[in-house]
Length: 590
Ligand code: F6R
Image (cartoon, rainbow, N blue to C red; front, side, top):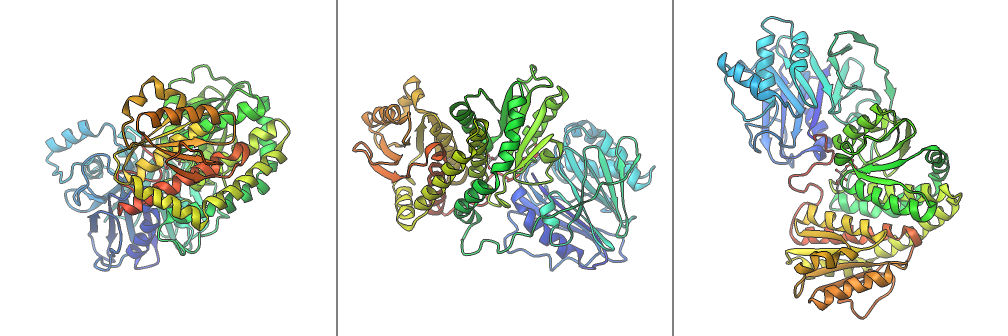
């Protein structure tokens, strides 16, 4: 969470470059943004910071400078105000800090600084660091002061600090991501390598407890604890800059939804050999655990059904934030399959590190190559969904499930069967995305947009589909939605169904059909408005959306219906599906 971008170099409009960099990082946080610049030959730091999304803002009123830094904020400490936006300055306006993470022990340090007479103007934890640096740099050179201060910080953090006395960007990382970009007589820093692509492809991913001192012609990396120099293992990114922005679509989310048939077809053809390779690793493991957060956790849950059904294998499933509390039995023969779009989700990284400490092997399935999870894994698979910009995950989810379909089939020697079923899913998705079907889903959104609660039921593979449907609806349209295993209805939730309550039922062409229909009937008997998502209509449906059967991959087109429904609900409420309130794309805090 929070986007960081820094520049030091030959250009004298560094503030504009940083501002543009922030635009590409805004998915990481959009409560507020800010840019700081040290103008040429002036001993001062000029800052512009504002609440809200960047939108049509500009930094034309900032002076030019060759050292600049910026931040997009996802608020943790302190409300969403201009004052709390980053960068933060010390008492004299000579030191500035931008920060991603949580400075857990800031309160005690702040109290001591207040006693020394420092004036605080924000409610943030970050501001404490600026005053701490002011204090320490009276006795130590600035770069050393950053090291000393960072070592006092508890928590998972990434910071950039600058001082008017040095033409340097000084950064340190523990937990939150930071990438250095190497240019010619210019160097860059960002919290996501994709933001660096327009400027350089030569990068170094800063590791935990490393700090970087960036001048225009030199980058020095040190161990933050020992000050020992580190020779950076530079990498050349072979990523391409995503072209075309939103293209013909009004929002990234819709664009990404429409990209799915092609992505799944590509995974079906390009992912098979990788799946066969990884199946060997799974076969050798004694105890396999699928771990993910949010939408990725539902892909993991779907994976546990797929492995059982297709590979006759017991695979455990855990939510990333909980896994750390239930992994005491892991050992060197265990395999953790960690699934994450960003590869930066702190809840996953933390539990994966704990698993590694118990000598378990890590196989990651991530969308962002070079991400923290990717780097710390023993075995790596790429989702290959292309950059996902909308906060609500769509194509990454279906991509994750597609790889799991191939993996589960590979385990029983049937990768071709997996490919075939994915191609069926592609056909089914194309049907869901056809004009007639879109119209029906949009009309459904119109019928339920005024409702306060939506319930979604499924069994087997449609159970994770139900959970994902509810998550998509609530996170972007802000309508309360609950996904349930259909069998659980009678154990409590049925009490909530009343006349007109929208009840979405997944009824695929599999063993769950009859039991799911029974669940839908139970809801109908209580007055529920039954929305059947199925390969065939049924008289009990008040509304029907057709999803052609795609065998065990039917969950993929089912979820595409859910994505579209959530999107149309959001449109009807006049909300921004790409940047829903309170959320951010990459969740790098615990
Ligand atoms: C929901 C959503 C989140 C993410 C979750 C994990 O649409 O996007 O629930 O799925 O934060 O993120 P990754 O996959 O990056 O680990």
